[in-house]
Length: 486
Ligand SMILES: [Zn+2]
Image: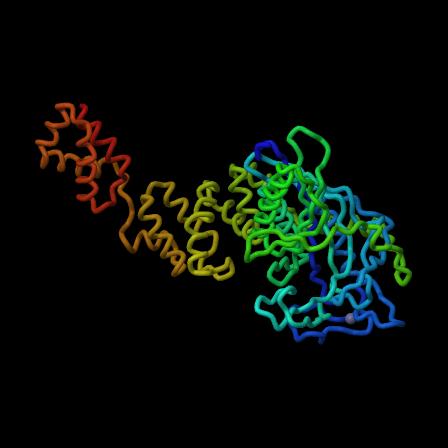
């Protein structure tokens, strides 16, 4: 079957580490990168006789995530034991949520090339992270070539929220847009640092394919534990092609967990997929259920900041921005705030947006600067936009003024003044120069009269030269034409 006739069906599970100061059930700190096994205690090591105590802040953060993903917040939810044995899990069970998750039935709107699309969020539940195994002694640092493994339990017991999407995603681009939108929200509501290199955000992708136009899902595979949006995109693309190849050969896709191999750029079989019943879930007997007061849940909703989607829509209406521009400017909360202050200081917010996303973003990237490092404020950039709109300087000069502003923080008006840049837009002054140039170039005037319209560019150039580049080029053009045609 032609590849285009297959339709991918993708669902994502995102694990987000919450930025609480302490772990989910004990007082151990959650700081990343400290010496192995220095942030552990009998509770998070699962020693017999210890009892977990729920971290209230983790519940608060989890509810905020639920609100921001338009979920129903359960008035009653509970923790369950998910039983499995692995060396990074000293208790041999993970405390998670099974049939009564804290948040369920939400959605997230993503922006794609085709427009806005709504992706369902099945649930967002609270659970604890496992420890980390360091595979040592081998060449690659991976399990399959290592001589031995070391267990670090510092991460064990750090609170996570697992956000599970509906299988509504239809391409790797949509998956990427979903993850980008989700990360943006999590940063806006300040519940996670979302640092992907440190594993604060990790993604599993469930991928299957079916013939376009059919309803029934194909057999899915799950690509586990990716910590880069780029890898997620690549892995999904690879997996769609791989499954199509399997089906085209008349074989069946096997339900299994796979790993994305970043060196070979392919997914590899890891183990056959477990079902929920393999984990023998049962209610965690050492913790009381989570019963939330509606007033408390409502209070957390009210406390949320304006979210990226709402801000994007508002920027489109208030400042006449395109959905793309509004999306870029709201992707990070600080950038959105910075832009909005400036956009209100000028009559041309769209022009202000162009500078922020264009030259300013480029310089920030080149010089590795953040907003807090800038030597100028929004008022000065707005001043530049207004000077350009008034026709005082041309676009080439504007770039020069901007660099002075960026590098030295000098006010654009002062740069224009000190460099004598002010563009001449006085028709009388321009007419005088035009008259002089025409007198000096009688042959060219004859050529024009003879039908050679192209020589007008030569005359504009002469006038610009005579005015040391200060004449308003648009007016020069108009005045020359007027004189020659009269
Ligand atoms: Zn502990």
